[in-house]
Length: 113
Length: 117
Image 1 (tube, rainbow over the protein chains, first blue to last red):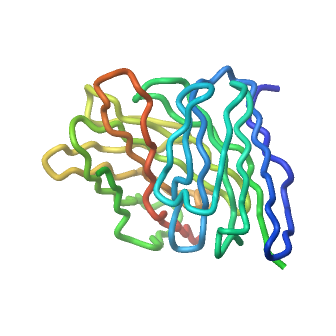
Image 2 (tube, chains in turn cyan, green):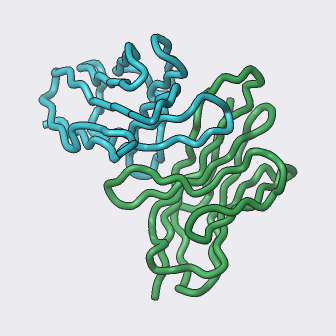
């Protein structure tokens, strides 16, 4: 099946630890995105990548890092510098171009314990 | 900078009645506008998009949206609501880069639609 796969679905992290969220797509999309969703705040863009080996900061990049070594993969690392990491994280991808819709994964719920 | 506003946190409508979920945007240049729906603890599903041309766009599940350039709005509509339409709805915008780049896709804060039997 074609689509975007995020793993794991639920993730628990101790304070002070880094954790990496996986996002893989087999849609042959050039662009990929990471969003954070908090209640009442909608989706906020963390990072996005338009092509392999290139990515740009979104509106809330502090405390996060990404890599884009392969077209299919766009992992997000939540570092210990992120002060409030508990949230629902959504990965998306799209074809390159301004008029293309994005397709979303099912999300990862990260909880700091 | 581009932005999207959804002025209503929640919209309540009776089943069978028409529904409207409001969205306004701010962007430099031509906008590309999108509507998505989200069910609890799931990702977002694409409903429809406006690129250019006809101001009334038809999408999935009987939804449509009307683009109004003078009011910078892109309201989501459906002539007859179903209980199963109850969900969280997001409007999104991408500014025209003019260079073929994909650019940021920015979302509003979402509107919860509650359709009562």
